[in-house]
Image (cartoon, rainbow, N blue to C red; front, side, top):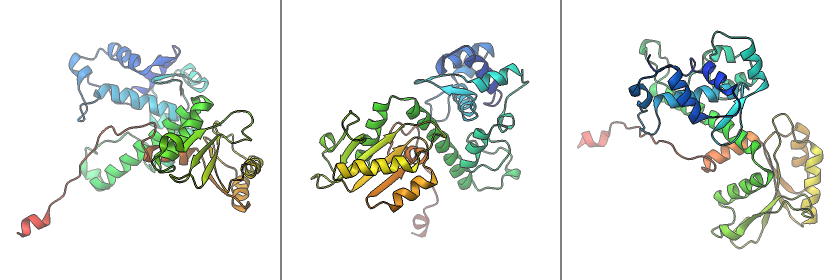
Length: 308
């Protein structure tokens, strides 16, 4: 058979996840065998030459299942079925596709954040029927890029939430160093604390190369929906006071309540709040926890060349 599209693969991927914690590479191989793909179909590569078409579509199927909460990312390259996914399998669906996933609030939120308005969301692709194409190629490419980054941001956030607390604290310090804090002395300009007796401060980074000022960090690795309230902001303010610090950064993998943001604006010390979505966006911008997979060059007519 021809290489199936990623939506067709959603149900088979979910069934594989029901076996327990599975490795994505093993799922690719198992499904290739189950679907009796030819050697040519198994090895057909994307234009980048870095990944097979079939593997790419299995990854997209897994990614969309995770956006709907049907599978959970566990450790690097591994995932497992969730309680919701088990309920879906128990209902014996004939197929799972984007229309099916749209019943789940998390998936609708994912679609909203990726600025997709079509009922059937698909991974980046060129519209084959140009007569139905309303967007320009530029708009399609940028829309696809936003969708890829939205999916990447949610995957990054899921990985960070599953990492140990000490990893999260180091991540924040490394992110600030990559943003230019600490000047060129990155080996000495930032460090994690996180020990008892550190007065509620998890890390500190020099604001400049000379260390004339410092930014103290509070890092809370919370799950979605476990929002930070105003009390935590006031506690952090007290910690800054004990350290005789004027600036603080409060980072969480969840969100801040409106009262927490109002409290941060009201207090006399400068406290910047970074929620999970902002954290993921900064990680992508600074290439922290991700890397460039492929660079596309968009070329246009050189008008000056033809004026000579």
